[in-house]
Amino acid sequence: MNDKMTSYSAKSPDDLLDERNVLFVIYPDIVLLDLVGPLQVFSHARKNARPPAAYKTFVVSAEGGQTKTNTVLQIGSDPLADWFDRHRNTEIHTLIVIGGDGANAAAADKPFIEQIKVLAARSTRVCSVCSGALVLAAAGLLDGRRAVTHWEDCAQLARQYPAVNVEVDPIYIKDGHIWTSAGITAGIDMALAIVEEDLGKPAAIEMARSLVTPMVRSGGQSQFSGELDRQARDTEGRFARLHEWVRDNLQDPIMVDDMADQCGMSSRNFSRKYTDAMGVSPAKAVEAIRVDAARDLLATSDLGIKGIAVKCGFQDDERMRRAFLRVLRVAPSEYRRQFQLS
Image (cartoon, rainbow, N blue to C red; front, side, top):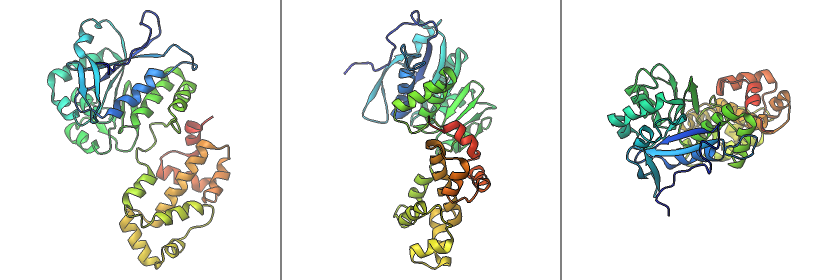
């Protein structure tokens, strides 16, 4: 195995006049996928699906060399000092601080934070993946800005850095030239959005297709999956068959009595047990499942919005619009505009 796994373009900056340098900053105990997901996007993104690569990527750490991750793999990196020495005149197009269990220690490392401040001042765009937002916040780069991190770290970010306007739900946020993303795979979504901003939507969609990503998601989408949340709450699978039945019968009216019959309970007992277990009422759960189904159809089909509303049991498009605004905070037409695959 090579001592270094840093990714470099085959061509130098002199060969590519419009090359964009992307600098990934790591430290011990990063989350491996926080790095390699966005790194894969930027290493292989192309304008009009043709070579050369649109970005030149670098991985750096405080000391350089092998850096421990949260897996058995280590990542090779160059020392940050290179960017104050032999790369001191190299433009940084995008600076990305990676997240991980070591983010707290990195945020408390004052010399490291000072280096981040200087590099950020040289960068056209500054980003964080997951808990990397703690490092940006420690450098004062998020003061007065909207920001997001992994949902498990949002409370800490808000508590330690009250000048940051922390939002829990979005998968990524762009505030000026500062981008922050939620946990782990959200870094891929942020990277694809940056590719779209730099190279256009076709380049982002082509990159997503290459990664076998189901869709290019906007930052306005929730970092919470409704289906995963239902599974997490119903760990014993008590209502799994009920949820499957709901998905199979969305076009029909679904009442609490119908759901109770499926579970062999009285309506009153079912409503109480379901709400206690799932954290939402049966009616709200059905609405969320209808919205999930409508989202899929908006993104993957040519059905009209009215047809989708009927197919998913909303009866009409106005009821579906209100449900989308409640659950996703975006109208169906806007959702389709952003996410429909060609």
